[in-house]
Image (cartoon, rainbow, N blue to C red; front, side, top):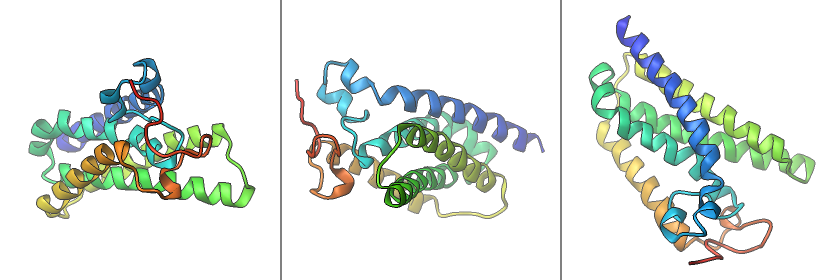
Amino acid sequence: MQNNKQILIFQILSIIFTMILGTLLHFTYEWSNYNSFVASFSSINESTWEHMKLVFFPMFLTILFGYFYMFKVSPNFLCSKVLGIIVSMSFITIFFYTYTGIIGTNFAILDIGSFFVAVLLGEFVAYNKMISDSSCNFLTFFIILIVLLLCFLIFTYYPPQLGYFCDPITGQFGITRRN
C-alpha cells in the first residue's frame, strides 16, 4: 500500500510538471529567438507533430527524473510511463482530427483542453499499469522510447512531407526560421 501512495504522489507531480512545462514548450522556441537547439524539444510550428513535443518531452523528463527511484517502487515504471506517452499522444491526435473533421475547423480552447485531458489520461494509464501485477518487457519499451526520441529530434529538422508534419498556418514543414 505504501508503494501505491508513492506512485500516486509521483504521478500527481508528473501531471503538474507535464502540464506546466508542456505549456511553456509551446513558446520556448520563439522566446529563444528561434534557437536551433531549443527547436529540438520545443514546438517550432503549429503542426500536429510539433504539438506532440508538448507531451513527449515533459513526460520523458519525468521518466529520467523518476527512473532510479520509482523503478524500485514499481518494476513496470518505464513501460508504464512509455505507455502513458503513447496514450497521451494518441488522444491528442485522434481528438484533434476527429473534431476538426466534424466541425471543419479547429478551436484553440479545444486544442488546449485536449492537451490537459491527454496528460491526465496518459498519467492515469501509467499509474494503473504501475500498480498492477502485470509485467512488461523492459527492452521493448526502452526501444520504443528511444525511437520516439530520435523521431522528434530528426523530424524537427527533416520532417516527412506529410500533412501531420505541415504547419496549417504557413503550409511549410519543419523549421522555417533559423538563427
